[in-house]
Length: 553
Image (cartoon, rainbow, N blue to C red; front, side):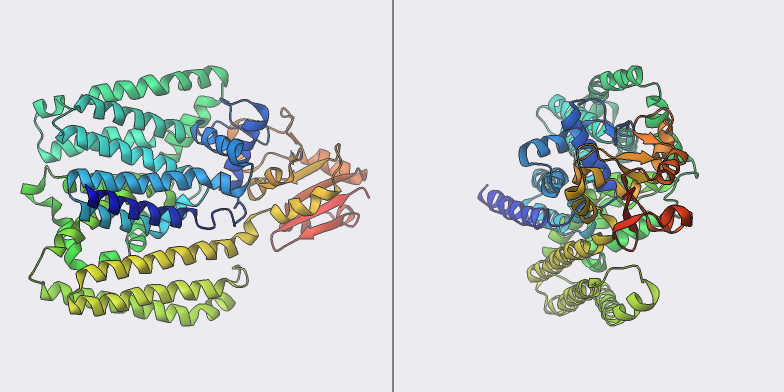
């Protein structure tokens, strides 16, 4: 028990540091962070807690839970970046601790320690948890449902309580993001039971229908209320955001079928190059291991990746629920490998080769960064090259040190060295994101405009609000939209029927009449304006992507 407490305290301290370190230093990044921060801010101002809105336009793409949590954080800590990101960071830490205690329950303390450290040092898992997006909260609830299901299946006591917990977790995942978590659970859990050969009597102990019934009871009231409240809800939330996004190729973010396989391989480097512990982790497919937690983790993670690979729309954040399950598998593999006395010569040589190749690739990349930024990728901000080189060198050092420690047979030091290298990579990525953010925030524009504003000043965003969602959050002044382009087009609203926007023709007429107003627009739109309109405008601030101007001086 003492070891569990000390290891749990270590995991909590490390994960809290990584998730909370400089959490509020970076301004919000559009479109995602700006969107969710503004929706939560509008909730706190309007008091309409059941009706999400974005720039005063009803926004029914997602349920309310994540917005509630973010708005609550604003109430407690103020409307700032740290308070906004505290919610995903909190669920990131919870996700690490949940993985730790689940591994303690089904395996041992060492497996729990290794699994949770692999998880908290995972670059993508950590990055999503330091970002104001729904996926980390959603991932926690989905993973918790899978953990509780398995514990209810193997526990001698209180299977009904575990089933209830799984149903509640699934309901919370729905109220945070939608049906994805429930779809995964109610498809993959029966698949696991069939593959593992569980008999009907064994399934009865779990009370699987009770979990489904509890899920329905918790989510149905909001679903019915929203359907009756807003006629467009069913089309926007269910048809567009679930059915069409999964089946139709008309949405953005189209990727190849193998996209997630490649992506997951990359985010778990260099752990996947250590073939001996990887072999131990992959042993779950053996017939005698079908009713083990490793097989459950493997089937669930593989099923998640397959499910999202079948979707026509693919985003890297979709696979976050699979990362804790894969980390548990790897952590258990490393723990079992520690007990292995006789090394596999062939696998060890292949591991050496893989680590040396990755370290060489990292070194070449570090040398090529100036050329890449100067000739190939010119849109990166100045100063980002230092952080890219540092990330490559940290990865190289992790691999080279791994080769040395593996040759000496220092397995415990080897795990710690690789984990430390990934911690440094993850921290460096956090610094790099602060540099990368300069083109994707409007905070400097809002700060430049705020001193000029009067109570009745008219402020507009032109044409496509996605790159400017955080503008109103920072400006703290009413902002109208010119046209309803981008995702607003799918919400069933138009600028004629909405008080939140005006048609482009009316805006151009106001410019011709030299009415006093301020407007933020994309630089390409500004340069494409009619010369007779543009010559009377005073540019207050601009960067490579955006222009803020004053009209009617």
